[in-house]
Image (tube, rainbow, N blue to C red; front, side, top):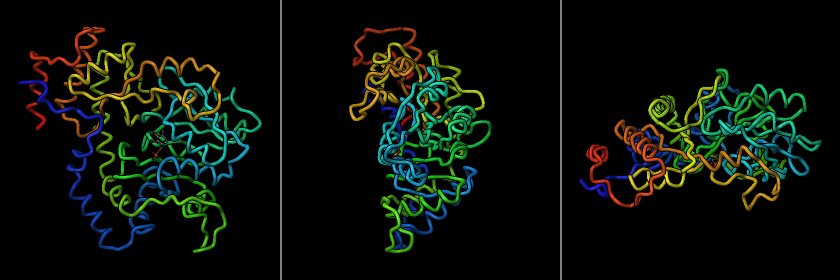
Length: 393
Ligand SMILES: Cc1ncc(COP(=O)(O)O)c(C=O)c1O
């Protein structure tokens, strides 16, 4: 069996996912098409009600995407020009975009070197008289230390907007992320644990005033039809995406259970450092992140054997060209962390044989340490490849 005939293990496999849920998804999309109602309708209402219930908050507003959700939450809290908002130096860049679109200045702080999450100790040092809010990012599916973050916010009278793009239904001390702060923001970008088949997001809150305002701000700042009280956005979650999300929401807890099962096998069997599962945390494993000082070699080794890996994120915020601030500041934990991290495939549709193959391949790399072998040459004696290629058809 030639290894080149082996199918790739993709980092995400949306076709497989769609085929699993095709019947319910197609039914949902058809329902919308037949209804003739595409924006702000029943599907979205249904989704908002069920998400609020699931995340144990009073209100949920569907919006265009997770980036807008951050902007809208800040605007609803009247945070903007002249204000500073503190977040993590290791996050997806849209966290920063979301803050900047409100008019506020993003300020980044260093992370905890083990978990990659914002370091509460560093937050306090970054607070100035202009600081108005904190945006903790529950990265990879693991919650930040909310006790400490809430205590800091109280001490300095700051608002909290939790970026839950990667942490839907993750909990900290048994409480869902998104329900701690003044507001929480979600992304339903297709890769997320609950992913649409396009862009979508949401703001969740327990505060009725924030809820009301986000409802208006997402719809051109309109209070009553053609009456515009605020300068808002056009950022609505459309009915087709809502129908897709309604269909998939029913399978979210099963999917997360499967992610955790795979993570548990990785935790037990991989002979490589990985991000620890934190105390008080229910990790939903949006991403499974390992660490290697031979990262580039490891990624090439995996790719040559049909396994696609990614880095979340290779460039910290302060080093991004678009980020105009804190250019000369040094972030030691960020530096080390972003040099070593690699994300392995983790999604419910991975077969048991594929998970085993990933484990064996990473472990083989570790055994060979820093292999200098030609990564493009095939592996004629690789029995795992053979078993796997026979299983994935
Ligand atoms: C941590 C984080 N924040 C914000 C976002 C932005 O979400 P979206 O892509 O839906 O705008 C993402 C997703 O890319 C994310 O991972």
